[in-house]
Image (cartoon, rainbow, N blue to C red; front, side):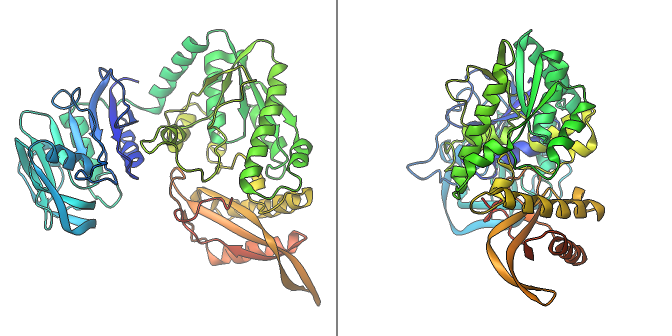
Length: 509
């Protein structure tokens, strides 16, 4: 990808958000750790230094090598970056009397500054720091203040270097995207040519060159990522792409056949493998969620390996890995503490002698959908909610049995069909039902019951990094609860999960 913007990661929770805002401007960008970025910067048109939980005054302060960047490429320093440039270039950073966190308003903007074109005084910005710049670096020029922060923004004379002590990437910075656009487009003159059509054209050409006449096997899941990856690869190598769709016995009701039917009309070479009994047998008696994930991952690889051996001379394994997975694995903090295993991360066992190809590894989830639309993929398929790789196993808390799977499949169908019939499905990012490991007392007719409890979950999000619970209409919840209890034998109570991420996760396991 040409005309890149390089974003240096210092461990801020907002780093991915900077990248998302830049991509929204149709500008390609990449995130690298501040201490491990490319030595060849010839393809980069601008650099952004992100924020950090560290203090520039601390002994453990991250120290980037900016010798090939500062004064040579347009540079925007955000929060920690702004303080770093000041503290180590003739200015002063000191602890604030009070932690400057939350909403603030610009009280001063220097006239005729391109960075603030289209931004008015009193524009709201978002602060998040406990230190503050007390003196500007050598040749620093103040260009904006808030009521409490004199040096909210500055630039350095003789360089195309700008620095701001607030976060333009967050929603609460009203004109943040405009400021990023001013810097990248008007000041750094970065072309806005990162569009879905351009990505498709470039990626198909790249895949043709990389794969030549080699055969590629891809594990389809029926989800957006693997489908878009399959269509991209199909455009590049045609009949040399072999798709395998494995039924692990933990899919939604009738999903195995429905997905196979859906792929028939797409011209893809897809083989369906029904291995449900094998998975359920391996999972029998296992309750620990991480163990369940690992068993499913292992058995999937075994089944997939068996199938790949039936394809003569296959050399590549294609995966639907997307950019958040890549960023996570190379974060400045190192791979995060394991909250839950990811099905695309961790590599392949030694016995699978296949090279990896990941056509979507530089895209965020919403970008994958836009690329899919440009490829002409059915909007219904592109609009499908994300579904976990381990399937319903992590929505059945406790051990897995065929009876529990059937109960949850029936419940899930009532819930998802209800969302669709009420016109709510496309307003929800992800929805599903969870079978809880408890029974509750109920009354049906004149008899006492002691049956399963179901929790319903529906969230809104952009990429799953954060999520809020959806305020579904009470009338809908009442109707779907009644339908579940009346239509699914073994359930007598339904609850609705109103937790956001963080602190909760979207899935329960």
